[in-house]
Image 1 (cartoon, rainbow, N blue to C red):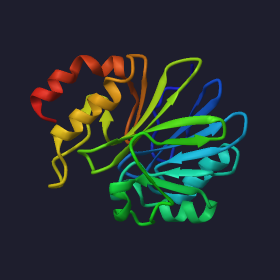
Image 2: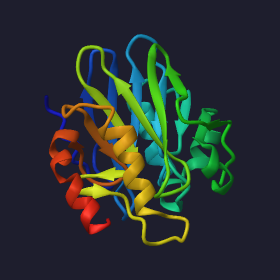
Image 3: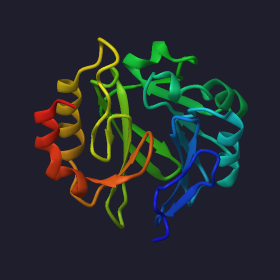
Image 4: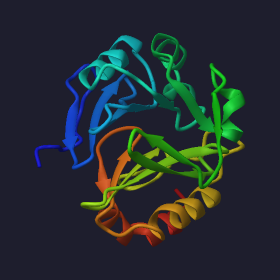
Amino acid sequence: MTYTGDVTPGGPSDVRELTHLTIRKMSVSAMHNNVYLLTCHRTGAQLLIDAADDPERCLALVEEGTGRLDHLVTTHRHWDHTRALRAVAEATGARTYAGAADADALPLAPDVRLSHGDTITVGEVALEVALVSGHTEASVVLTYHDPDGHAHVFTGDCLFPGGVGATQNDPSQSFESLYRDVRAHIFDTHDDATWIYPGHGGDTTLGAERPHLQEWRDRGW
């Protein structure tokens, strides 16, 4: 596998080929926001995760795939993940999604307000939806279960290499809630081979992070 998940703002995308799905990852903005494009091999249907910034680069990523965009998911309401949302949605006509409790704070109201346990179908590929509270009220976590491999989980700002997301900047944020939901909806439901694609920076696996759960709990962040 040549995919590493190490990308830089303005640099090329990194591409991971699975049996039924292609995952493209790129970075935009000084905050190193990750943008992911998922492409169904059989149908060419595509889903973009977080039109965070630089709409021209986001649209170029779509063109790196099949050129169409069927679905556009915003993982959470924070401004650094939504700056290109309206422009990309209007340019592509993609159906837009966000967690129900985060939806009203977005610059563009989503077509679909997601609930925990929903499924988004991208061509012949299914993505499971989990809603995680703590970083925001309804952060979206998407999971693809590769029938020929392990799970692939797109966590937004809920889980990173080295810990859960930040919870210190807003009275509505809660480490206790975020830690609880990340354990329940990610660690307790997936094995150590599960690959984690976060909203900023490099990737990780649950096997790399699981030994540190108690450390995170004890330090409170």
